Image 1 (cartoon, chains in turn blue, orange):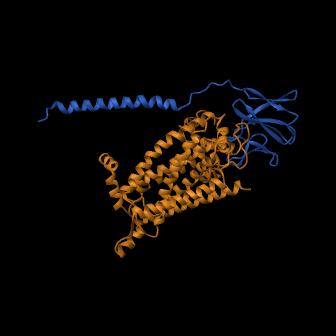
Image 2 (cartoon, chains in turn brown, yellow; image 1 turned 180 degrees about the vertical axis):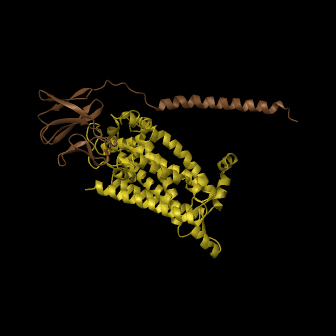
Image 3 (cartoon, rainbow over the protein chains, first blue to last red; image 1 turned 90 degrees about the horizontal axis):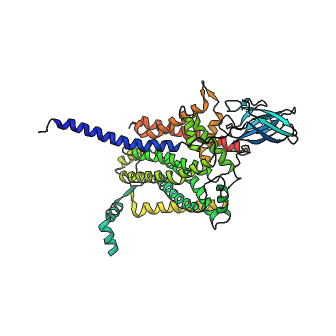
Length: 147
Length: 357
Ligand code: FES
């Protein structure tokens, strides 16, 4: 004969066991998942950088320069105009380059192409490149992120 | 002899030997495919050995990784050999794992009661690919740097958790030294731990169920009154060892005559060079990404591609549970497998044509 109180007591015990197990799992899983995600490292936002001499950038060529932690590309169009864009391809993050033969900005990774205004015109890139303002002080090209 | 008795009192060695002595392996015209699993295992062991050796000199940081590999291949005695073998064996291991997978698929060895063997094997293949992906970045050269940027960014197309996933893989927003350290940790600690336990399970299951006999052979054997077999000890084992020696010879010649290149050190502020590509076994996926338009029916193109590949992988894992015993279903498996193999080959061919001028 099982005393009638037994099932109830067992129920409570199982419930306590579950609570205990759940607590242990949660107290391991929570810190570990948080640990896996890298913390945001605050970085002074780069607003403007020097991008080298304007003179040495011939028409129909381009140059990749650091813009903070990311690359940027300055190009001189065949018409002689200076333009600057973020050099990170909007497709899958490769760094783009200027292709004089195409007169376009080109991404080697999957053959993406952008025109001289940074618009995605061929291949897989889904969005245009972010564009920066270009000024020349003395001979120095200065590129600035738009506010 | 005393030692033998001493051990035997503590470990059931005799039982194991006894079982092995009675173990027989079916022998028929497809038996050659039985050797690819063992070959993959052999290559895995080579990777463990050479990987441990590389660890003695390798330094996992953006500032030192490239230089340390350069040091290994140019200064450490036989360093070039160890590194080259590690790189080549990785490639052969992927190839032999794929050969093993497709032979098991085409010979229907995934059937009841070997469902778990198949599932653990498929997980091992995925782990092998993860080894390849994480190891690729470690020399910190240009090609691997951009391949890792592309590879990790693909995860961003996963809805909701995508961004978090990319940050988790990269250890930040960009591929940097933090990524290198992370992937290094996966490559030398997490993945080997998981892989070793899965290999143990896989082998245990293979041992328990024995080699599968293809249905066609089974049918013919039923008419002929039984199937031929050879003893595991020593016949099968010797053949296995022979295959391993052959693999070792191929590996040594490849490593010696076609040493694995190191390339140029990665520079995050250089444009991606032309001819950028991942390892050959990811080429088919890489080529597919080139042909996926930015949007498919209003949905992000990568997302569609990633979802499709995810579905294929999931389908492959669950295959033995999805396919019943009917010959029709088995024929469908063969067609699907052949179709996928063809797709991978065509895409790889296209990619190779694109990168070789
Ligand atoms: S990353 Fe630029 S086209 Fe794919």
